[in-house]
Length: 155
Image (tube, rainbow, N blue to C red; front, side, top):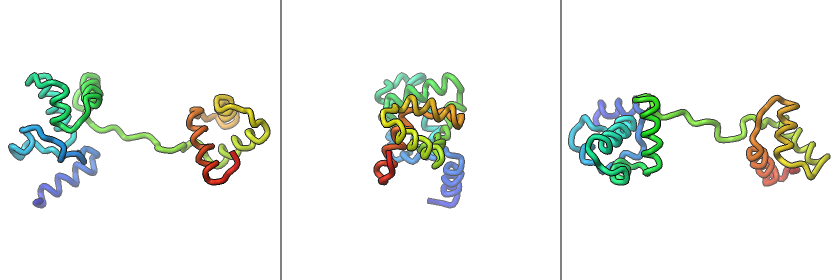
């Protein structure tokens, strides 16, 4: 890989538009000339949509050729229809853990469960909202309490 290619890959990674699954692309355009870069996920998504809408390729075939599922194709198409090119940009992902469930909130929930063992998570979510002003999904509470139980903390 030359220095220009490395530089482009670095820019793509920094911008969040690097296609980590570039090797899955089997469409003939990618690899036929330098212009089509399988590492650029925005270009890949655009070309996949173009193949279906302009070239008449089936969704199943285009999805397979561009390394996406059919479900992903329809998600990409909706984003394109709604936002144009901006819809093809990757979205920042949300938190992957109960970031609202601090030690203080978890302690509050555990003490409430000690006092009332029959307390259900929807009611616990209501109490957390009342006490801390935090909207927490009952399933997030269940996961946090189960994680604490695995660590040997009182559920």
